[in-house]
Length: 114
Ligand code: SF4
Ligand code: SF4
Image 1 (tube, protein in one colour):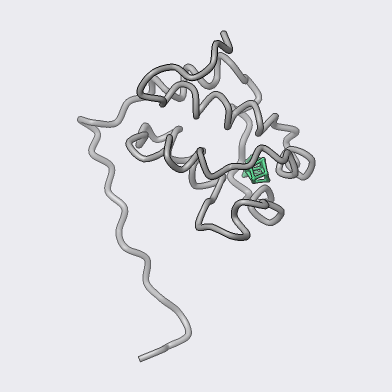
Image 2 (cartoon, rainbow, N blue to C red):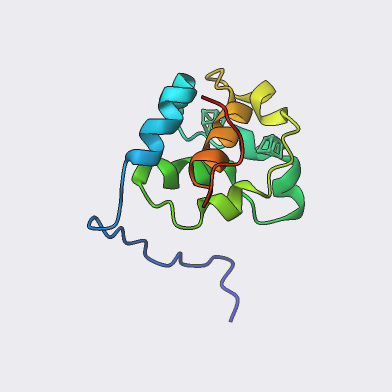
């Protein structure tokens, strides 16, 4: 039955598996990542989000929480068009953030961006 709303599945974080290592590496490469307020403005303009379930805000949140199991595959959906960077009210270089997430979560490094 459609009540016009749905209930989100509960989200649990396994703190034994969560690690802040990826977030620390991304922050070292792109320090502006630290000032994200999770407003979601980047998603309002996202080209990839328009055609796929990709969600930059959620991706960044997962990295910050250390839930990095699926973020590499998610980051691959980004087309690096840069529209999110233009709209971000905090001036975050979101393209660099995405490149860093993609790089540091790769099974083997894909780019030398150090
Ligand atoms: S628009 Fe900027 S501050 Fe807002 S969620 Fe996206 S990256 Fe974070
Ligand atoms: S650079 Fe990636 S995350 Fe940003 S708007 Fe383009 S497709 Fe979306």
